[in-house]
Length: 172
Image 1 (tube, rainbow, N blue to C red):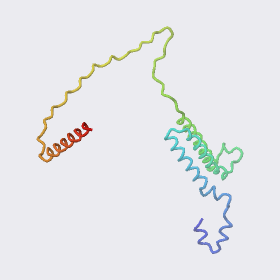
Image 2: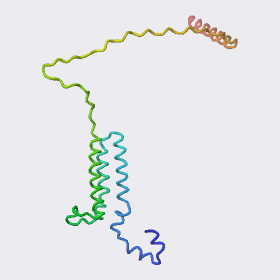
Image 3: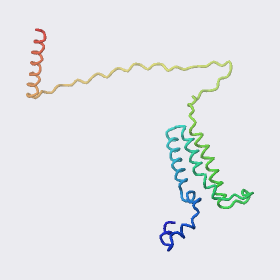
Image 4: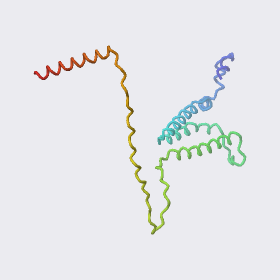
């Protein structure tokens, strides 16, 4: 469309040939909005949020204007044209995906697999016996290596300082 404006001698003549009512529908504003809504629905569905239903419905509504580009004649379902078939197929696909989104959004607690009880039958519950207490493994005996002289002097100095501080505290 833009190339047609640039290459024509009279730009205003090119503008007069555009159906401005169909411009938004034909060139994508609603489809972009529908794509954003479907993306948000997919994210919500992945996060198990119920908002996915709302986003999906808004995406379907945003993509609905394509229906206005196709003229549905009386009895169209008996011999549909390509456009009528495409719109009908898209509507059927939207309904099927809507059912899938609805089902995926339902949050059901998992049901335990218990056998059905018959009246008069006794229920037997098996309790697992506690396992014997495992003995703690004995610690490995570590042999200390000789300490370097500098570290030994430092430790001795700290110990002497600690003894001096404790002696001062006792006097007070």
